[in-house]
Length: 417
Image (cartoon, rainbow, N blue to C red; front, side, top):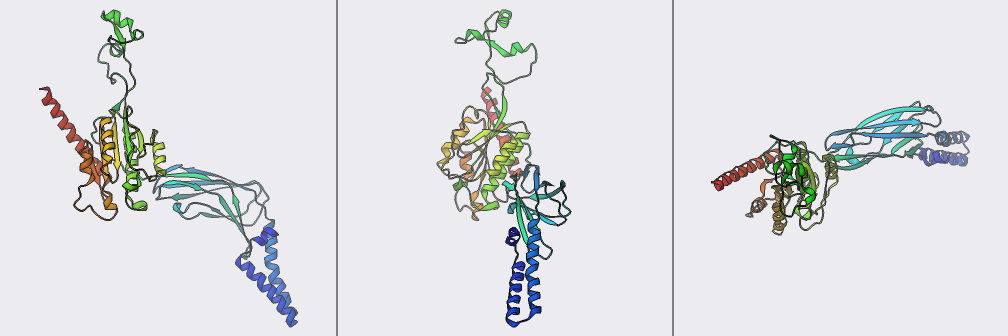
């Protein structure tokens, strides 16, 4: 009864007030008929509160999300498995699942005929244009009487996460020099003739340890031969995302930072599909070798940071000889030191530089863009604005890489002569 009275709606309170007023007026005026009317009006919400308060549901919900990771703009399906272990009831209940505002309106279902050991499966779809991690749930049960006088809300605990990754753009394949990295003495090569021993050994050099001597090959060749210190070579790529707050302009989905996140996600997916072991690095130097799925999940949560300059502590053996693709925002003169260091360690350095002033609604007036300064440090660059197509820019970057490769080939041929 107490729970029922706590759920009085505005209509229920109005009925109680009207009934009490009618009874008081009937006593003052001596009208017994008005008294009966007042008692009836007061009794209606009280009886409804008693009946609704007696209802006991032991509902449990199992929530599943398919898929758990979904790209922005793509739908995800939420499955709810509802079971009742409490008393049966012939009344109807309204079930509402709590979803964040970014995922759309809250889904509602009307359930009737709830019996003991009752089960029901319901599904609905959500979609978000905003990347991030969202919690779906808990479930809210609304129990009301037919007159709308009483409404009770009860929560069924349990939530499920949904990760919305950034949008991605399918990029064309371009000629890229470099990308191979490792720490062995030679890269793998096909065996044209002989056995693996002929490839995995070399002549003894002064200072080599005797435990590395390969006696069988030494006996066959007639000279000391040692095993090579070899580690597997693989195509490695690092995607650098400039997430410094000072390097971007604009707000929300229309900001240069969101454009940079989409660019980085597209690059990660493209390089992973073409056999690269991809690592994502942020401006503060944080990063790790992860699967493309883990990188996309990380990009779903990335935000801007108050970082002054680009950290280069991640460069070194892992990037030496490899491919580095940087997605850069607005640059300053002091960024040249970091960009020069990254270019020095990388085998190939590509930069997609955002003209962030266009996101601010103004174009640079008489000032040189950031792309020539990056190109002057040895990077192959392309500049993008908010209206530029990412796949076209990537293709242009490939053409620049092809011209650079041709020029390098001509220079090496002339040098050989």
